[in-house]
Length: 296
Image (cartoon, rainbow, N blue to C red; front, side, top):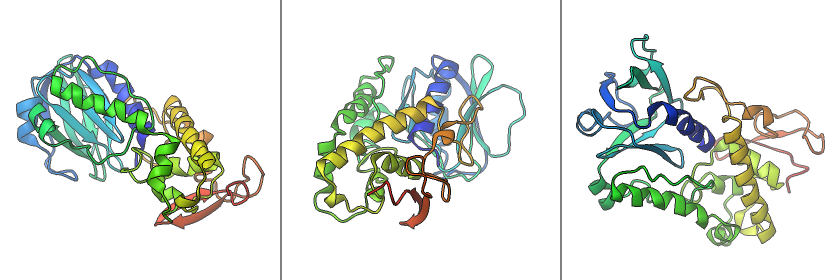
């Protein structure tokens, strides 16, 4: 599944191609995604509207239009790409947005676990679709181009949430609980956007065993975890994300952070610190990679 860095890379890659472009037409496939494709809302609020900005919340892309916001979740295998109009569509192209300049933005999703939803400013004020998400680990840019005051205020709550993510926040949320730290970091209610790959890398960098009960972690440990989150995710964005199976950026290029992975997928290979073998274990049904000597 694309994690926060991959979604952010997609967002940055799409901006020069779609922002300030009008969506002239929309074509949808016959199959639904994880949620039914909102065909009526797409025609009413998206067709004929201009994309004024692209934001992100956790693993969700948010396209700000003149009359509404369109949220796209990539699911397990979703991709958003830019193609010349008239070029043959690919298998599993479920949504095609034809832009006024003759290009098309296509949403391809082989497993159909992604989804698209449309939200008007009034609906956003009545029910925030992201209300249960934890703070953002990376700072988000201000988007003054958002035309609706209600949607702008909503987006500003994303950027403000970043300031709540501190070592003290983690320690307070953990309390005296016995939940393993890896599960805690992957809980989107605690912190937004961290999945299986980056949880393993963060804990390796912080020298903390993935099974460590969160209530036993000292303040210095939370400080290391907080620093590792910022550094690992920032490096992954700068490297274009991690290509494990399906992720391809909007430019059609794979990410290269997998070349920098120190734990994930490296079971049996020497630890980059102590040269002892990296171990693979299954925690809560997910493959987990760590060094039992360096991670305490």
